[in-house]
Amino acid sequence: MDILNNESVLSWILGALLIFIFTIPYLSRWKRKHNQAQEKLDEAMRIGSNKPLMQHPIIDLSKCIGCGICTKVCPEGEVLGLVGGKAVLINGSKCVGHEVCMESCPVGGIEVSLGDISSREDIPQLSPELESNYENIYIIGELGGLALIRNAVNQGTRVAKSIHSKLNGSQPSQPIVVVGAGPAGLACTISLMEMGLPVTLLDQSEPGGTILQYPRRKLVMVQPIEMPGYGTMDKSEYSKEELLEIWDGIFKNHQPDFRSGQQLQGIQKSGQGYKITTSAGELSSDYVVLALGRRGTPRKLEVPGEDLSKVAYKLIDAETYQNKHLLVVGGGDSAVEAAVGLGQQTGNTVTLSYRKKDFTRIKTRNEEQITKAVKNGWINIMYESTIDSIHDDVVLIRQSGETHEIKNDYVFIFAGGVAPFKLMNNIGIQFGTSTIS
Ligand SMILES: Cc1cc2nc3c(=O)[nH]c(=O)nc-3n(C[C@H](O)[C@H](O)[C@H](O)COP(=O)(O)OP(=O)(O)OC[C@H]3O[C@@H](n4cnc5c(N)ncnc54)[C@H](O)[C@@H]3O)c2cc1C
Image (cartoon, rainbow, N blue to C red; front, side, top):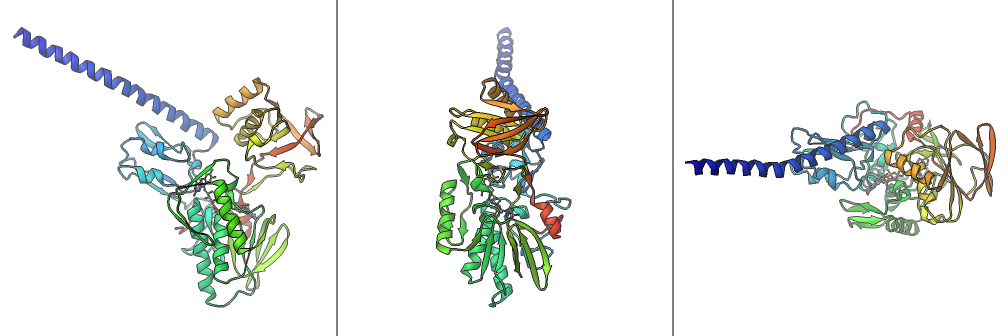
């Protein structure tokens, strides 16, 4: 009897020990992950990156089993995290709508959509044909609220077909105007051309759109794309260079009437159609397709010399700048990341000019990086400074009432962007509720 008792006590102890051995590490891992995700969420809320800009994962908490698969599969990184054992949106603004989280959720607990947009002032009101509240003014691509190259291309093609069927075999009195030469505008332009319709494509910059300016190497294509003028793009990944080549080939083969460096500034009703005002003058058309994306126009400093070719509003590849005198202007994450990236290259002298006395809205990781870069002598920060003027070999910077002349080869300005929504408001486009699909 005693032996039996001893054995059962022993097996109880062993059982408890096993539970202890396996559950404690699990629980402490769980707790650590929870804390890390909570910290990231707090940081995202602090810098405002938690709020989604476009379509994003919407989690059904009653279905979520906290497996965490959705947090690992996103090509954009930390969009989702596990807090309290459930998936939560951490960096909503990073989501570009790949839908991989939705597809890999084992319990079908994620939907990727725009959510409730009734009170959003950045989602235009559109008909199912993507026509705005103005007849024959269409909005396609990211400007309408849906990210992804595939959506942009599909919407461009769809609107071209819509215009073609409206014209019912006749030709428009003037070329159709498409503004924005990203994937949406390009697809629309080439589709219209393939249907024998005249079209003018404008862009404030070079053709390519957002993605070609982004430093990431690989672009993810979850589903095949039918690209007008090219055919099926069915690889799951494309490098920026491959995309550029495809865009280039389309341009060469179709020779659209493309006008670069022309910024849309306004649209007004004029007779049966519209007067389109750009930085280069005026155009008229009965049909306008807006494919401006959502990144907007880089904000300028409006200082003498800013039009020199050595001034840029983005940094694509830090490694191409070595043994140079460089000025970075701004105090956000982009400015800090550019300054740190340039500061780490061989022989560069990097000055970071910021008009405030401290960085307040940057990621903790960037705060650590910039502190290290200053400590290592890679970067010189000029707080509370403003740019006076930019010259061929120097820049003049004002700080504490004094003007400093600093040697300079290139200037990178990160002063934010002017979102296209103000322009859209001025045109009279209505926002808020929509039937985007
Ligand atoms: C970091 C990041 C990663 C991404 N990764 C992927 C990915 O892996 N796969 C994927 O499918 N999608 C990805 N996307 C999303 C994709 O890039 C966009 O959804 C797509 O580029 C939208 O195309 P668009 O033609 O609507 O706009 P855009 O590509 O933004 O093009 C808009 C064009 O309009 C021009 N423009 C703007 N304002 C004016 C004006 N006033 N006058 C004249 N021209 C103007 C701009 O110069 C630009 O050329 C990513 C986006 C980002 C930011």
